[in-house]
Image (cartoon, rainbow, N blue to C red; front, side, top):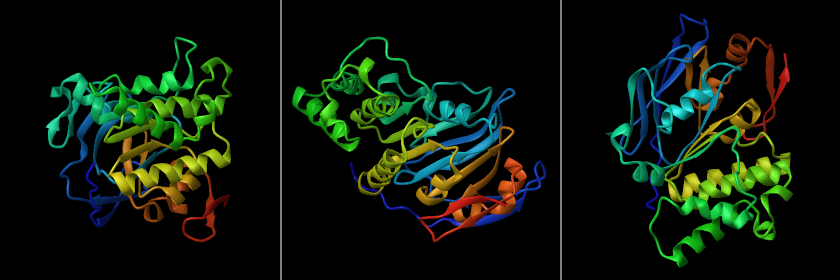
Length: 277
C-alpha cells in the first residue's frame, strides 16, 4: 500500500448552539477519504458531517447514547441512514459491490460472536474471505496479523479457551488479516489490560503512519484519545460538537459541558492524565 502523507489541517472554532461547547472543525483535502455528509438517523444521529483521512488515527468520543456506535456502523456501510450520504474515495459507499467494500473497510463491533470453537489462526484466516489471493499470500497476511497482536503463541488455541482480552485481540486479528485500507473498531480497548491497550494503540499508529491505514476508533477513555489519536470527533446527542486535534478538542471546558464532569489535564503531551476537576 502506498503511504499517504497527512495534510496539515486548518482549524476553525465555533460556539455550538445546542450545547454551548466550543466546536472545533478541520478543513482537509478529501481525496482518498471516508466521508459522511448530512447523515441523519432517527433518534441517533443528527446531520453528521465528517471527512476522515487515511494515515490518521481518529477517535470518536462522547457520553453514552451520543451516537458513536451508530456513526461507526454508518461509516462501515452496515447501517443505512435516513438521509445524507457516505462515500469512499469519492464514490457512494452504498454503490460499491459488497466484496470491494469488505476489502476496503474492516469493521470490529463492540461485541462479536464466534459461532464455532475454532483456533485463533483459523479465526484470523476468516479475514481473508473477501480476497481471492494465493494460499501463500493469505498465510503471510494471517501471520502478520497474529504477530501484530502478539498472538503467535496462541495460534492453535481454541477460542473457547481464551481470556476476554485474548479473544478481543483474536477478533481484531481477523480484521487486520483482511489488510483493509480502513479499520473501524468499536471500543477495541474494552477487554484489554493496560499493557495490551498501549501495545495495540502503538501498533495502530504504526500502521497508520507506515501503510496509510485509516483508523477510526470509538473510545471511552479520553486520556487514551488525547495521547494516541491524531484527531478527535466528539458527539453529543447525535450531533458533532467538536472535531479536530485532541489538544484543541478535549479541553476541560468541553469535557465539563458534554460529559458533565469538571476535569483537568496533567502531564506532558503524549502522556497526559485526566483528573477530576
